[in-house]
Amino acid sequence: MALAGEFDIIARIFAPLAKEAGALGLKDDAAVLTVTDDHQLVVTCDTLVSGVHFLKDDPPGSIGYKALAVNLSDLTAKGAYGYVYTLSLALPRETDMVWLEAFAAGLAEVQDRTGISLIGGDTTATSGPPTITLTALGLVQHESAITRLGAKPGDRLYTNGTIGDAYLGLKLLQDASLAEAWGLSDGDVDYLTDRYRRPPIDTGAALLIRNFAKAAIDVSDGLAADLEKLCGVSHVGAEIQIGRVPFSPAAQKGLGAMPALLRDLVVAGDDYAALIAVSETSAARFESEAESHGVPFVQLGEITDAADGVRLLEQGGRVIALERKGFSHF
Image 1 (tube, rainbow, N blue to C red):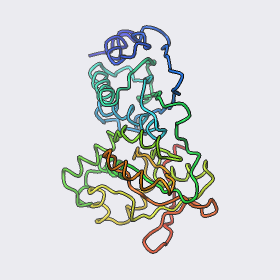
Image 2: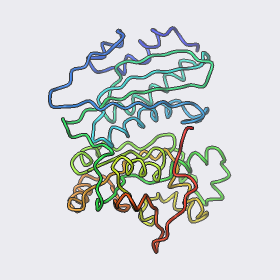
Image 3: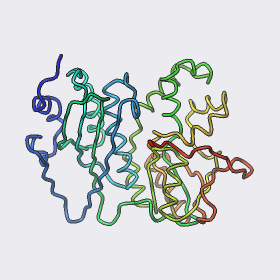
Image 4: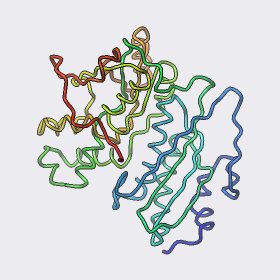
């Protein structure tokens, strides 16, 4: 079924997602939002391009899910909750309504889980690959947003997600024969490919991050690279004990079959977990609160002096040499 006009698409596909009154039913050029005196807006924007951030043949529902989930990961790392978002699409003219309806269903699934709502955006045709730009706005109490600035030597480093699953999922989608080489079951393959297509959403971590973190970042370009970014802004160094890095059972199977994968997993992107620094004096209480809230934060290492740099250590203290630190577009 061919696409209707732009405004018909908005009315039929996207207006049902616009549940915030300030969206004005997506019938205006802008949204009008009221924010209370005791809250700040946290704004983040991500662009996803076919062939770069998702595969051409990925299900459209998972593409919609991923587009919104990766923005929510940024908000969670700031200690913020998702409020509203805008969506801009550049799509080939041959895109049909079936694709768009499935794409919107993926967005709606994330909305239902998190309470965030669409308030506007833009659609345009392109001769290039499908491109999705999503800007998410989150709410956080005044002066309580967590940034990359604030980590101090002695702080403990934690993450709330397993590392490298999305990388392995992408590789499996590109070469199915790797499943046998890595000793993976069909269930393992499904889990890993799902982690690539549908990043985890852990909005329950936002409160813990806001209450305990001194600095935070979401792991999207790779554990090593994003830790280096946090340390650069905070003017500190860091040590991670590689034996403490959380790997899923499926990833552990792959590592058992091919130990050299370790260096790929710690620099691969698309993990979308939070990486946070918590003061030594608050660490025990933080771990207790995280356990009681069912949020699986794991301690990886600690913040050190800037002169130490960022180091990943094997058992025995040997530094792991990395050819690259993480994903880069350019």
